[in-house]
Image (cartoon, rainbow, N blue to C red; front, side, top):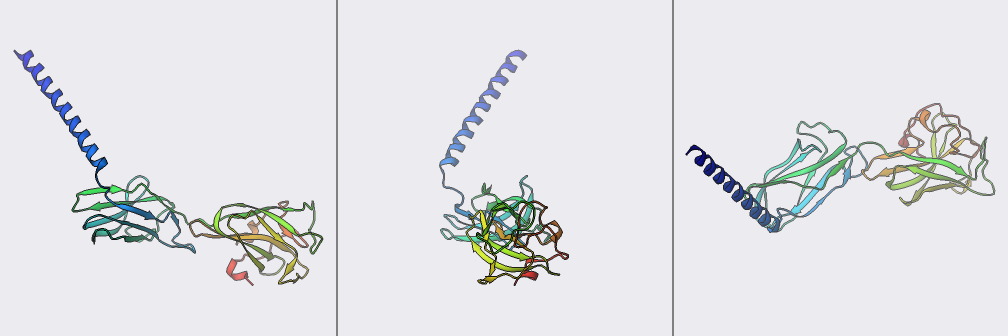
Length: 272
């Protein structure tokens, strides 16, 4: 008798399990073919709260019917970071926008990394984390002029000459780029020339002229200034002059030398 009861209980439990599985599949299929929770999602791919570009990440979307929407930011582990909106009334079929400033709910700047938006729709009783990540990046762009051509061996390149000096650009790829010529034998280094470049350009060039005239005798460095995809600005040579370039990289132009300027500089400080 006891054995028969155990068998019946096992059969019932198995049947309940099968029924639950089938019900789950049906619900999953309905959700798969149901209307999406949010439509037309757009977001900022990368930003820097301290950069020169957009200092906040934008999120926009629309929903089919009125709802009260919660928007939060979560980190790569899914942990809560900040609340952007709480129970915000959102009309149907109207694109709405939200912004995140890169800080947590205490107002502190969060570490660089990838973050996502978590949405909650009260009337639908649904919540989801958007798959599109936002990259927060506060590191300065790090462009570099790797070498000069024509090769000049040991010693300076003297300009003006029969040809211009061309430098090969490497390092960070960004959304804006300009070539700069820095005079380095002054007490405070000075940018004496700027030229806009396409973001895809990989070469910088200088013919020894400044504003159409031969540059004064001195020590100059051929460099680049760049803004990366997140909006961070960076220069080569870098603002810390003693970390500019190692000897032998051939990044100097006109009476070149590998001597370092005696004082640090910033791009704004030394701009002409």
